[in-house]
Length: 260
Image 1 (cartoon, rainbow, N blue to C red):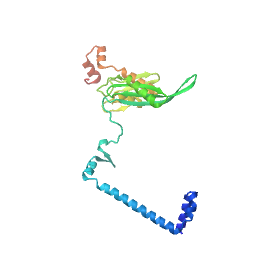
Image 2 (tube, rainbow, N blue to C red):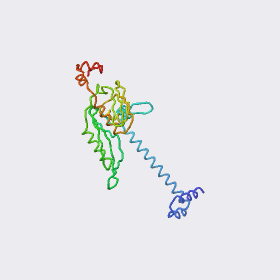
Image 3 (cartoon, rainbow, N blue to C red):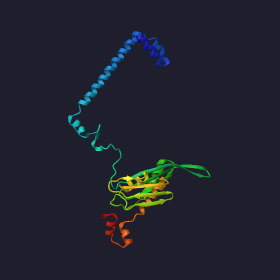
Image 4 (tube, helix red, strand yellow):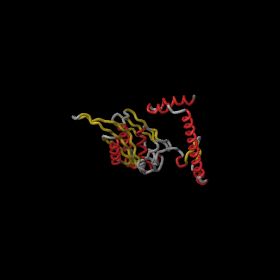
């Protein structure tokens, strides 16, 4: 009885062309077919397990020990020593060119022929050692626009002076159109507590300790231009000493409390 119920269920799942063939198969033939199929599946599965086990047994003890030594236990999971932090970001050291795409948007230029749509990309490039530049590229596709922006950013790179190679010399406030930018110095180890666009600019320049706020317009292009303008208006201790008619050593100790 169970065999005929299975035949009916199979006939519902099979195509219409195969339904007459299944319905007319004798019960004894179906029983022998199912028993043969199950035996074949069992033997195949057992042989696969044996092959996997034999491959595992061929691994030498030295190889297993070396693989075990390269792992370390951290919390509830096992992580490799080579990447214990779990980060997938590539290593970026000093004097390494860092390229960051900050903003991508669709734009349209209207002329007598109608609307000409394109893509605009804003990018920043820096060597993480005091030099950085920004550029904007436009093209019909995002790839070409990105390449143009990166090329312009590399051409527009300028150098910025840093205090102890980590922060700015003094607090800055700069206004660009409707964007008001305020940057403040920070102690060692403070980090970057600024707008995300300014954060990427500081990474490209090599500034590691800085705090600031952006008031008014948060347009990415205005924020980037205000940041570059503000950083370029910094005055070195030598410039301050020349204006005040004093020695550079006295200016360094009085203004910054350190010898640069």
